[in-house]
Image 1 (cartoon, rainbow, N blue to C red):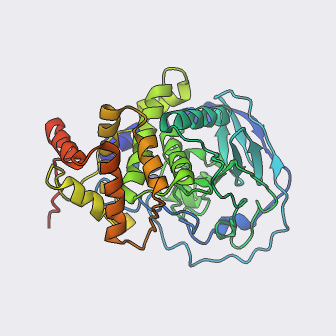
Image 2: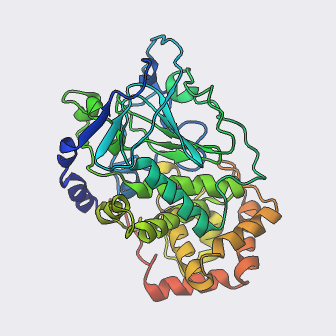
Length: 400
Ligand SMILES: [Zn+2]
C-alpha cells in the first residue's frame, strides 16, 4: 500500500517546477522567528496529531502525505528576536497554474475563513476558491453551519506555540470565520495538519515553497519529495472537524470517521466541476487502515464504546476506518441527514467528550444517542452490514 502510494506521489513531481510564479515575494515585512515552533501538534489541536508517525504499518499516509517523524522538535530553541510583524493582506487570482509564494506572514479573508500564511508557503492561484467550494459542500452535506450562532467564539486564540513564543496573528479579529493556518516546516520537524472547533492548521508538503526544498535544506535531506498536487481531501478532513466540533462534541470514532467519510463525499461530489479536486481524486490513494478486531453484530457496539481511547497516535488508524464505514452505512440507510440527526440528539443531551479523559459511561451515552437516532439494533445492523460487504473483516496480526 505504501509503495503504491509513493509511486503516485512521485509521478510528475517535476511538473510543478514548470509552473508560473505569479507573485514571487508576496507580503511586506520580514520575520525570522517562525522556524522553531515548539510543538508540531500544538495545544489547540484536539482531535488529530501525529497520525503520521511511523514507518510502521499503514497509518495515515493518504491524508497527511508521507511525513515521517524526525528528531524531537522541542530540543532546539533559537533565540532570534524578530521585530513584531504586521501581517499584510494578499489575494489569489483563481488560476491554478499561477502561484503565490509568501515571503512573510500574510492573510487572505474569504467569506467563511481567514487564510493565515507562514513565510515560504506556495499556494496555487485557485487554492482559496477551491477551499470555498469545499466548505460550502461540507456545510450542505453535514446540514450544519461552519459559523453557528450558538458556538462561543473566542477570537483568534494564542498561536505562539507555533512561533516560538511570538504570535503573528494576535491583531486579526476573525469574528465567526475560521482561522486556517498554513504552516511551513523549514526545519523538517514533521509537522502535521490538525483542527479543533476554533481553527484548522494545515502542514502539507505540497504547500511548502521551493525555497525551503532546496538541495541540502532540512526538508530535502529527509528524502521526502514535494508532491505535484494539493491533496484537498486532507483539507476537507480538517474542515469537517472544525464544523462538526463547532456544533457539538463527538467521540473519537465518530469524529475521525465522519472527517474521513466527508472528505470522500465532497471530493467525489466536486471532482467533475473542479479540476484541482479531480486531481486529488485521481492521485490520492485510498485504502483501509488495519483494525485490531473484526466488526460484526456481536462486536460493533463494544468497539464503538471502547473508542480506542487508550491508543496513542502512533497506533491510530482503526478509529478512522471503522468510523468511516459506520458513516457510510448510516448514509446509505438514512440519507445524508444522518449526521444532522445524530448531531441534534447529542447536542440536546449536552454530552461532552473530553479527549484524554475517557469515561466508559460517557462513551456509552454517545452509543445510546446513536440507538435513539436510528433504532435499538443499529449496532447489530451495522455489524451485519460489515460482514455482508466484507469490510472491517480483516485483522492485522503483527509478525514477531
Ligand atoms: Zn482527523
